[in-house]
Length: 253
Image (cartoon, rainbow, N blue to C red; front, side, top):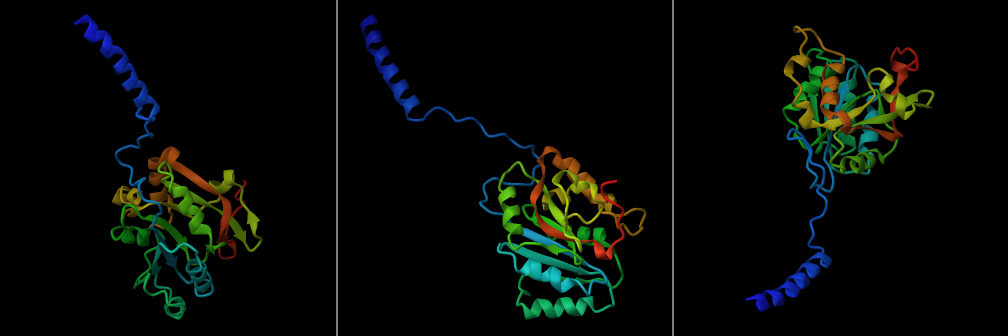
C-alpha cells in the first residue's frame, strides 16, 4: 500500500505542473457591476439614439442634422421632436431629411403645443432599448467632427462607463472648455447615457406639479447619481454649443 502511494505522488505532481503551465489556473475575475447596470460587456460596438429637440430653430436645424448625417459611425438613429415652433423649423427638417435620404433612420414627432425638452425626452424613453446610448441635443448645437460617435463608442465599450459628457467648443468664439470645467457650464452641455438609466428615473422628476419642466437637472441629477464613478468626460472637443442663441453668464464664475 505504501509503495503504491509513493508511485502516485510523482504522478500527481506531474499532472499539477502540466495544468499550471497550460494556463489551467483561473485568471483574475473581472470587476462585477451592480445588478442594476443597464450595460453588457459582450457587444463589440454600441447603438446610439440622438434625441433632437427643435424649437424655433429654422436657422440652425439643417447644420445640426448635417453634423449627424456625416458621422462615420453607422449604428445611430435620430428621434426629432419639433416642439410647435411655427417658424418653418418643421418644414426645413422634413425637406433636409428627405433630400439627404435619411428618412429610414429618422423619426419626426411634431407637438401641437410646446412641451419642452425634458418632457420630450421622457416621451421618447418608452421607445428606447436599455442598451441604447441616448444623446439629447438641441437643434441649435452640432457635432464638431464626423468622428464624434466613433470616439463615444470607444469609451462605451468599456463596461465601467455608463455616462459620458462631451467636451464642447463654444460658438461663435470657438473657445475650448477644459475637461474639469465642462459640468460648470450650465445647460446644454451634451451628456450621453444608457437608456436603461433614463428609464430608472422616477416619472415625478419629469412633471413638476403639471408645470412645464425645462431644466434637464430634473433627470440628469438622478442619472449622475446612479452612474457615480462610471461617469466620464470625453477629452476631445467634438461638439459645438451655440451660445449665440442663449444668454449665459461666465461659466468660470
